[in-house]
Amino acid sequence: MKYTPGVARRPFQSLEEARLWVQTFVTWYNTEHRHSGIRFVTPQQRHAGADTAILTARANVYEEAKAQHPNRWRGRAVRDWTPIEKVWLNPDRKSPDKPKSERVAA
Image (cartoon, rainbow, N blue to C red; front, top):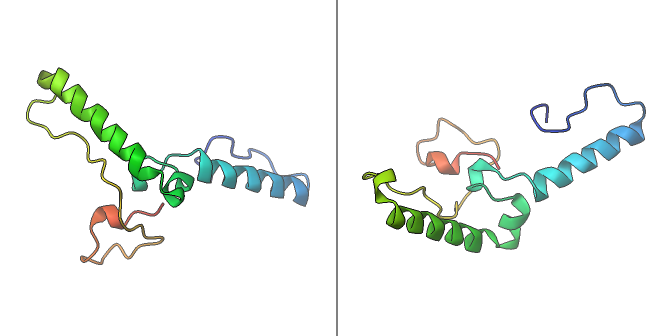
């Protein structure tokens, strides 16, 4: 929480103020913040199943940009916009059976 925009810089004056701040944070985190561990979609988009269409559209934009300006890409592949199949909360980072993309918390 401490690295997010709008983090409280002073102690809360009441329990109600703290609850309101946390509720605002949770709403932002789930509906506005794009998470790198799930390819820069929001948790709400992912849970609703909208991430597949969003990521497909992004992949198309990247492929079109590469086709229009191949000199900017020079043999590099476009960013991987395939949906992340599994997401782990508090992953066991020592486990070799989980690809790195699946060991990122969302």
